Amino acid sequence: MSGPLPDALIVGPDGLARPPWAATDPLLREYYDTEWGLPVRDEQGVFERLSLEAFQSGLSWRTVLAKRPAFRHAFAHFDPEQVADFAETDVERLLADAGIIRNRAKILATIGNARATLEMRPEGGLAEFVWSFQPAQTPEPRTWAEVPSTSAESAALSKALRARGFRFVGPTTMFALMEAIGIIDTHLVGSHRRGTSGVWT
Image (cartoon, rainbow, N blue to C red):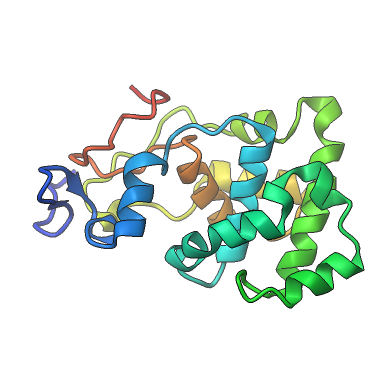
């Protein structure tokens, strides 16, 4: 594997190396430094991130991240039991909420995904199910171009969730979820966050 390109990582004033997307914007830098790629293994946490990744589809992650507090307020902190009980009046409330991304299909999918999440509890639950698709190895990218956008595991997870009634869970979205919750480590080699999840050592 070739060495990193000059712009693959940026060393900040704090001496820490980050990829360009996380190097300058304070919101993205905080997310990168403290959250992205750390293990999330609880049902509510996985459901939240699955939901936010679905809303991100076609948009920038920064847009979603900036709206996350509003999303949490609007969706009962992504408690699957509460979201599963949302009715048409809630859909109309959400469509009128300028603080979130007002997309009817994604709102309806989130409610439906909450109901599908509850149905998975007897077989171990959403978090355990998603983590069961952890691959044997994680990527080791040295440049941003070497970071995959899908994998055999993300495609299999997508297919399995769709079979259980989930929507907006395509292979690319599921790969992003797997990155976000620590199932895989796509931090660039040389980044200060590489290998810090405790999942891949």
